[in-house]
Length: 142
Image (cartoon, rainbow, N blue to C red):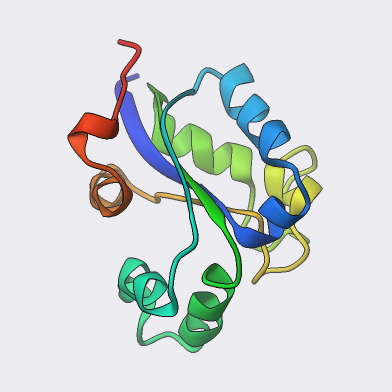
């Protein structure tokens, strides 16, 4: 299993619920290391740039509005098979379909307010990490 990096975002709904610590604990207990963090609040324009891949989808405007509705915590996670492992820990996008014990099953309210974002591939992880972080911000434990 290769060591990878992936982007994880704790979204405004989970920030408002004050569950940052629980989410990070799950990553660390499952072998992922947090090697960079950035708490910020995206503007609607910045959210639109980040989610540009979804610009033609019907949920795009609502997604951008939601992601700019409050602070987020962007993180770079590092570990073996980090992309896949992070997505397993998050659970299905729709929390009603998420496996019990996943982040979304435990902390998400809806398919829109679903607590966390995670990169879906190594290629997208690299692009998404670069959106929030420079190489100087990354502090690998390897």
